[in-house]
Image 1 (cartoon, rainbow, N blue to C red):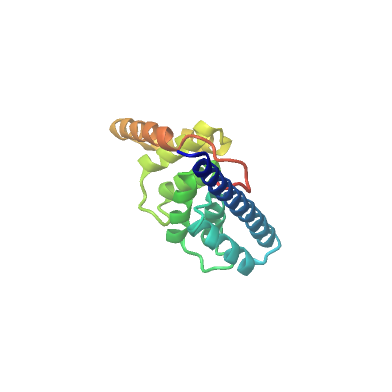
Image 2: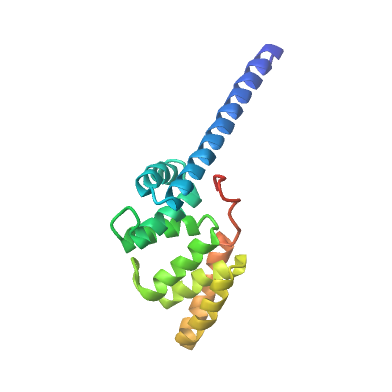
Length: 175
């Protein structure tokens, strides 16, 4: 490869890196605007901010806040199924409260079929990352499982922990 080709390649690479940095900074600013809008009760603005980030940027924290909005009916019609869909996406990105809440959804059958093994599994992932509420929920869930169910739940938990048991990046960053 000639020196000129290397220079052109490096210039293109630097341009792509700059574009990526600008995109990440914009997503972070948009996300923070969405959180501020949600806290202020401006749910329309929060929704308009979170939806594109959640769908297009696959932003885990935007997905988490959308789940909360749909789960609580804030600015949207309460929809446990949609809440569970967004919780799963956020949980898979290592957001402990999403993992804990997804466990609760499975425990209660809210937006997903009631399944104590999956409740145990998601509570285990959140507890693994250090969510204290999940540790308590895990202890309360264990006696609700029979011996065979508990073994299956423990196997599922280990699988989920190996896939999703790493904490997400700090809030405001694209996980």
